[in-house]
Length: 329
Image (cartoon, rainbow, N blue to C red; front, side):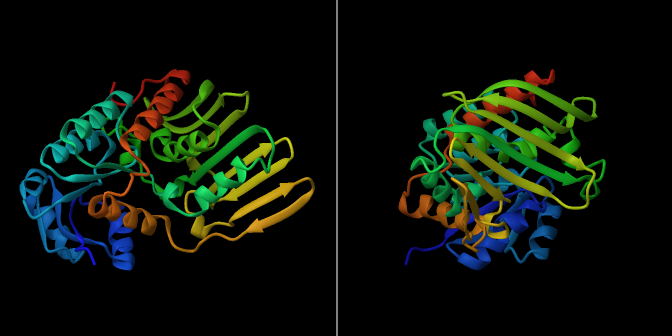
């Protein structure tokens, strides 16, 4: 059995707890040996709280020869800088989504991976779940016929956020499209291909920050797409759903972001309804196993840097269509 990947975490925030610590405790393959924060004392405190052997500053973590891989769990605006530094330090990188502030930064990161020969994986966890390729298999087999419309809704009640949440920070490259929209864009591209944004309307939480976004798009072949996002949804419960409409029927997915918590794949074809139950292992578990295989076995990367470039291109286009600047520009 291969030795676990010795990994350090850049960022002492909440995402690492459920995006990495919990999955690794369930599936193994990775030893979390250190955490980095801007302040060494904060890093040491976070390490103690979470049972991690040691804390360090960002740069000290990258300088540690015992660490072979890094999970970049920093605010969006810091992803590019510290991913490039990690790659240049010889570390494999799992970078939290969104991979960067904009397409230009995503290209810089991809170029750094190519230049160093390093591993750069984007943490778009929903793509790792078995339901995702199963969904694509059904579509590719023509079960729905020619696709006509793809919809993705991600609406989060505002009660879950405070005004100082990093999602609402211009400096940290926040916004609903950067957060929830990354899932939407990833899904829409996965199903429909590369879209052209035809319209977008933002509801600004504060100047320059979209608290909500609605966008329309068109895919090759004429299929249209729609995404509806909100960080200030007025109801009590989340809405995370997708619908794919074809000439023969439709596919409905409740919570495609976390299929293990959702309703599986519901099909209505030629008047007949069927449901495939989802695999109950969490997306983050599959992602952790995938990253360990990338590092240890040289397994193909499911979510490479090029996907980040494509996702950020669409997100930048959505902001421009809404009359807003892409993040970090």
